[in-house]
Length: 308
Image 1 (tube, rainbow, N blue to C red):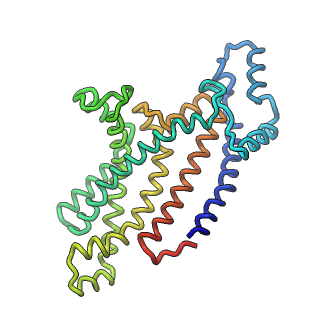
Image 2: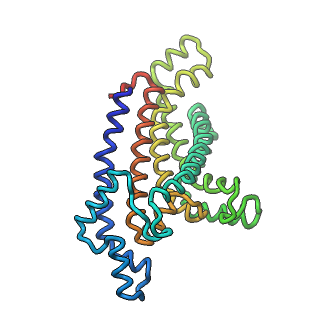
Image 3: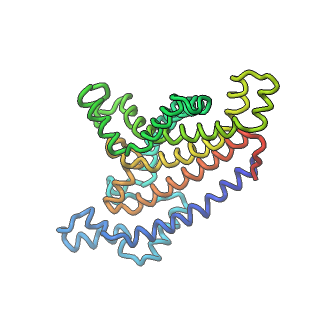
């Protein structure tokens, strides 16, 4: 186990370096000038040139890449061009990352609390109105776009009913509506996956053997079937958690949630190259680490799975 984890962590090095290289050169060819974003197009030429030199934008691309790579190897992601210029990118990332992590965990917890019981019930009652209703609900949840659902939740629960604070007000309850917005589609996906996985497991030979031995229905369902049925569910949940950590840009924008997604969008709009590169690197690390955790979870759910 320890050697497997070490090998997976060592794979982070070429992954991060390769991704950092791709992001750096893609940002270099993106249309737009960071100097225009900072000073505006009406700035004096001398001011523009001074700023360009201070940001190393006047140097050749290979030289800039060498500076970036050297900083990356020393754990320095550079300084932001726009967010209080001179602020380290790492400080901005550490400031926003916990907010996105909290939102992602709340969303996936909500989705799991809905999807697993509903998926199990739909599988056990296959063909009943419970099964049909859960599948219709799951399809609706998957089909609802986040930007529409988030706006509707704000209109009804913030403006009209005043049950939750406005997105700009903050507070402990401010996480509820963003979590519902992100968790709805995820709950639909996981409900369908839980149902199909449970149906497959319940038709297995070892389940029929357990029933033939006279084991109770609850024991067969929750002790023998559920643990194996959760393996594909864990895969989807892990991948979706990585997506929630990085793909919540629309939801964070609607609810003005100060997270990593909103920070990435602001960095792209402002042509803040170091900040964009830092955000993408964090996104990559999150995906790799989440996949590692999911792989480790496999061996716990099913001891037959060998990590190698």
